[in-house]
Length: 294
Image (spheres, rainbow, N blue to C red):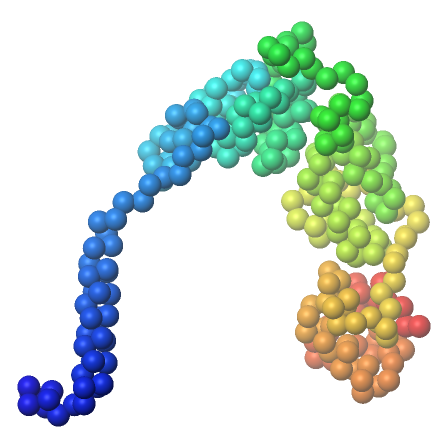
């Protein structure tokens, strides 16, 4: 064996030695890896020890039982915020907001905290108590409409004036402010409805609004469509990128339309799409109101 070693050239022997050194280094690295210690990042602006423990890898070792009760979000510590049912990440954002000088003047201000979903806020809103005359030291409440609080957050008062039964909102013309006056609809859901309406090109029927996820079933009792306002999709002119972003078209359907246009020259009716394997009768039925064949 050792005789064979000397049969190699000097260059070959160097290459073999280099590979051997690399192999030993990799094995040593793998052997010592379990002994490494990973330090947890320290968040300087979050000093609450309980919150830090909840955001660490030992979170499951500190169970917090959620029992809703009255609380003031301006003075409650992390333990109290967690005990009313707020998730750790929302609690952390509340403390950061307060540490930065933020103030909650009314319950609806809490809904603006990042991560505060509508379902969470609706559950805790009855328990929020904020003294009317409360003023934090050195930070008087803003009183003018031009205040930064209002400029950054136009939805501050969305919980104040919900519509009463019998009021209907037009799905194709309502903006987010009007949609938020519907019971069960907050900033997130209102924005979701508007974005889906824009993606579609307008609502053709009321049931389409439920194609957007996480909307209450009772929404249909508050909305109507007075005049269908549909933005047509020019099927003979639209590019592949324009076709594939429509909610009722997949990438493969959009590509099939492009190929059909190349073969036929133009598409004259939605029924032509039935000759494509990618489309079904149901696909054509819901897509047809949005197609223009000019």
